[in-house]
Amino acid sequence: MKPANSPARGKAAVFSGAGLPFRLEEYEIPLPGRRELLIEVICSTICGSDVHTWHGRRNEPTPCVLGHEIVGRIAAFGHHAPRMDLNGQTLSEGDRITWTIAASCGECFFCKRGLPQKCEHLFKYGHNAISPGKVFSGGFAEYCILNAGTGILKLPPQLHDAVAAPANCAVATVAAAMRLADQVEDSVMLVMGCGVLGLNAIAMARHRGASHIIACDVSAERRELSETFGADDFVLPHELCDVLSERTHGRGADISIELTGVAVATTGAIAGLRTGGVAVIAGATMPGARFEMDANDIMRRMLNIRGLHNYAPQDLVTAVDFLADTVDRVPFDSLSGGAYALEQIEEAFAASSALPGRRVAVVPCARSLESNSST
Ligand SMILES: [Zn+2]
Ligand SMILES: [Zn+2]
Image (cartoon, rainbow, N blue to C red; front, side, top):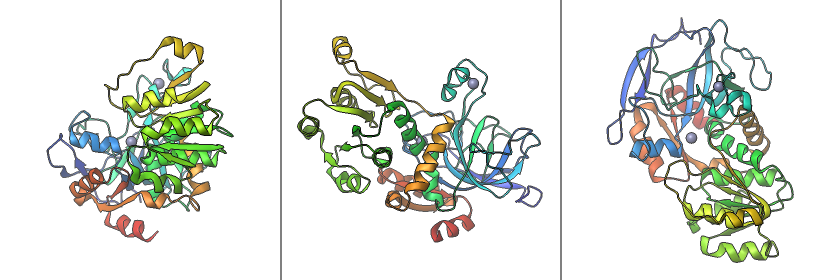
């Protein structure tokens, strides 16, 4: 769709703070700047962090347009906008794409040291206060402007919108955790937390050839789902020590991935490692999960403890490849919490809050709602 043919105004659901209703407002649809793209949003899934913000457990600058797990179609290119995606495929108007959760400058101290996700000029979709002319920066709107430095990826047709949308947050974060864990093949892996990220971690570890996967969660209701995603054992926290010991001849896991943000789970992820094992800590999205460690334990057991925040563009490529390769055998659809129109965003957030292990989709155009349910 060319902007000249599109309606001059587009809707956005503006979030003004916890406890306040979203305001559905219309704004002029901007032309993309020189290195920007204009995207028509097809589907955005509500991430756990959006729900935390909605409840006031996280603070974002307001007013803002939330939503960062986004699938859209290219509506227009700025004159110097990228014409190739992260895989080197040509981009054209109408292409169905997703993109990195953040745009990085490529030139600052951290970008030059392999940490684009910690860019000094990082722009994160769905996390910015809106201002005149800068409204379309999140997923819960009809349009989104992609900034320079965003990694774009065309989506393969076998991934329908609601399965593809979490790729650019939940699944890419899991892909980054696997990259930090390094030797996933033939490993015994411990996954702490069986929410959307944990289930994706289980499935990705299985796909990468992990020899044994132990999933741990406080909710026994997640046993069946974790097994359908590929876990060999599901344990409640009090069972973890015994099962881990039994499965590893008392040595512990090669890798643990911590996705809960709870101090006791982080302690368990580190205590459960074998000598020389790797723990990736990716769940502590809010401050306060304090725990004690003995430096002697880190030293003698030669532990590798790695923090993960955001991810690098290559992780999004890994995430989408993983979804495309496994969508026929992994029940990603079972994580769906339904689809809502933009006008129903309050209901969508209430549903997401009530279904913490699911991804609720917001589809800004009614047309998208129809195609989303039919694909
Ligand atoms: Zn997210
Ligand atoms: Zn940078």
